[in-house]
Image (cartoon, one colour):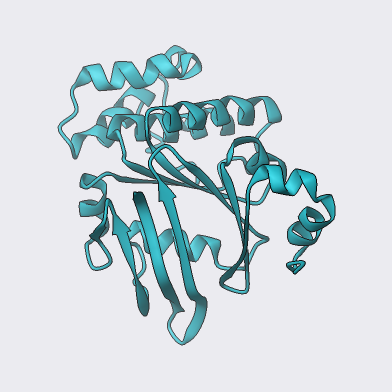
Length: 236
């Protein structure tokens, strides 16, 4: 059973159409990577899944319930969590950022302590303003917020962008741990190597449409196909 499903999603901004009938599904405990260069529609898809933009056609399902017309905050309460960038309240401490994120669901202090326990570097900076964190630490904070929400489905938009490989490795390990407890994860990723390291399936997007779906094993066995997909253009 798919936890997160997108069916025939189309739309864009005003008269500019960006997505053309996008369909995908992520099952419980599965990690799916959506790959493609800038400008192909990946972030537009994330905004529609999160409820920040409305599609002109198609449907979005969470645990088999149609959430297409449900506002973003209600999607969070239903178990959808979205990580876009490194958003945080810069003047608040790390701990208070986590408290704010848990407020919508009434999470108590134990949920905050549990999230900090996963990230020792954040725990050491729990009383510092979020604005003093490094890029990698801010990304950890965003993912720590997600842990407090205990999502059924998690959508992560470009979490490896600009981060050191050692930091990315730690974040990927967290994604694996979330998958192990049943979280369905859709990872929007430009880095082919990052996607290959963590995903069960890789989807490739061009011009607002998904053009190919492959497992990491299939792509390792066919380097030429992988090269064509990464550079743009599906080899039939």
